[in-house]
Image (tube, rainbow, N blue to C red; front, side, top):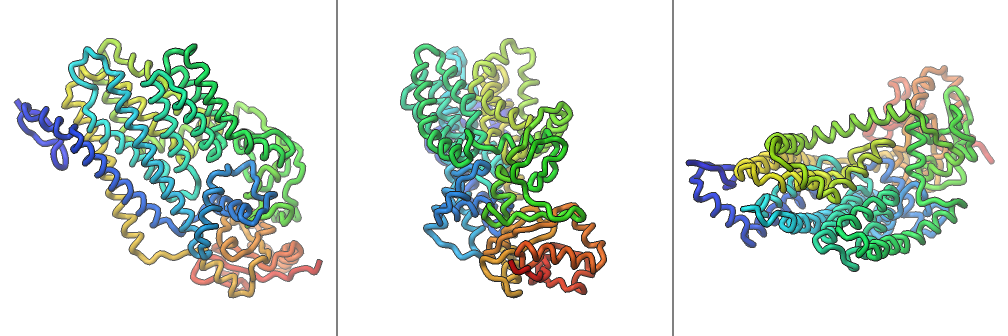
Length: 585
């Protein structure tokens, strides 16, 4: 009779009597160290390649975090205290900028390396989480079982497959946002809940849980409301609510004590209570269908703006925003200021539209991690007809309910893969743990083959990604934002000058590198109208923009006729600039 075991690159046919020996070998301390070391090496190399290949990329979010970090360094508290952008990432960037003083050319690289450090910390906290899960699975297994749900090495292979798939393809280190840090805290929180479950509570564990949740809140405002879900799950996981009530209260007290000072300072700076405005504003944008929130003027009875950006012209729309907010691109830096007065409304039509968009995003995530979805379906099919197969899944609610609630909360407002990515690994792990704990009736070979098939699919995708990133790293990469900045300096602009742009909508890192401030804009959607105007009409728009103090108008991919009208190409990029006559004020 033949069987299958893990050997070399996959499953090889060999005598069934050797199966237990091979598993014992891989499950030995030396075998487990080798398995984890191999996955750590793959994760670090793949993460670094992805980071370095994207080192010159920058999103509007990243520029805002850098602007806030610079505000901290120069003591500009008016622009540093921000109720939209969570503070932790800007604190890290301020620390990095203060220590290394990078030249502007390397600023985006420094940000990506800070996130790579977050990736390494996420790798360490994932190790803590999965050690806790393996220990938990052993404790949870029935003493009547002839064998554990899975050999330990199989748990680790599954876990690192989930980690690599989520970190590299659902979240990605190309992002210039703090979501990798959110993932790090989420793994630590999930691991602590498991330790609390195994130990039936513990003052030290609950105290550390409260502190970690505060760090997560500093990193993402969303963690303020979801904290109470995680705390409740941890408390219920103890199995003795009366005995551990004071311990759970301690966790809540520590969370409030650590997070409270920031909430106080933030509320005082806004002259109203707030723990952060990102949720409120995103709700208003999505449910009230505000297409361009930077330029919100109170349309469709969405509120009475207290100080919106100033509209200078209706056709094409021209907006000015030079004061009182600083930064490279003021509308993006402090959206709560420009949108103060907005009144979110619950609209059924808006909810249905949001749910449709959320479903589409979750389906894309499912496609990225299709192998694990197929694995879950296969396990359920194998378990159907087995009595009580769903009991372990229900009993381990503390593993999968909190991340599921987090994903559901995003689903009714706004979903991006990077936002829900931190909760994907604990969610998959909770589901697989519940199903595998009910799976002793399923042949061991089938369980191992299923895990190896899932992780092999992830491995192929990781190998392809590493090959592509390797090729990108060794190709000649250009810092486009730096080239635009150098081109603007060649036109005579200097740090501190003001500029305007056409339809770039927050794509402003070039301006930061040149030390410029964008103070006026023809927004996205009006650029085609502008280009159709006669030269005389365009001159009126140029004079209006010059009246804002802007010395140059910048755009991207203008029509070919723009060069004949006086537009200057900026290096070998697709950006062009037009000199403006600045009005004397």
